[in-house]
Amino acid sequence: MNAAQIHLALNHFPIAGTILTFGVLLWGFFSKKDQIKIVGITLMIVCAVAGIVVAQTGDGAEELVEHKPLVTEALIHAHESAADNAMIAIELTALLGIAWLVMYRMKKNHLDKVFALMMVSNLVGALMIADAAHKGGQIRHDEIRDGNAPAAAAATATADKEE
Image (cartoon, rainbow, N blue to C red):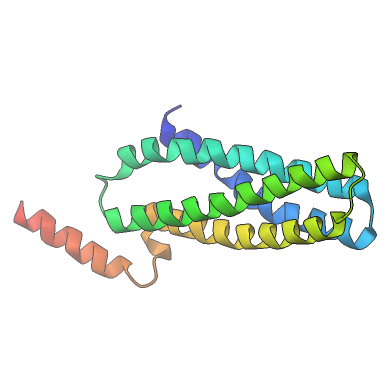
């Protein structure tokens, strides 16, 4: 498998996983069941680790597609920037989850506050990673670009005529 295949195969896990995690965390919050909260936090940590692998394969995937028709540096940069920011939110959420687990084990106070902050961070991260995924999809799927596909196709046709 090359970097692009790994990137594409694994990128769905942090996306779907982060969204699923929010549902599990919400369930744990309203049910007040610590075991459900622990499952949600564990899932978030797994998503964060998978996100690191996805991020590490991004440059290799870029090298394989950057010279393809209709692929532009602007599209790649928009995806990379959005993904970097989403990863910050996801990693922060995982760190908050680890902090909650440590505090829970040590029977510390303020668990509810840390958990609520983690849920907000997870929701923000889920929205950010969905945006990064959409921008990543636009790199090779011109049909989902916001009206830019005809302009990109015209630019490619013009460039082909000049050669």
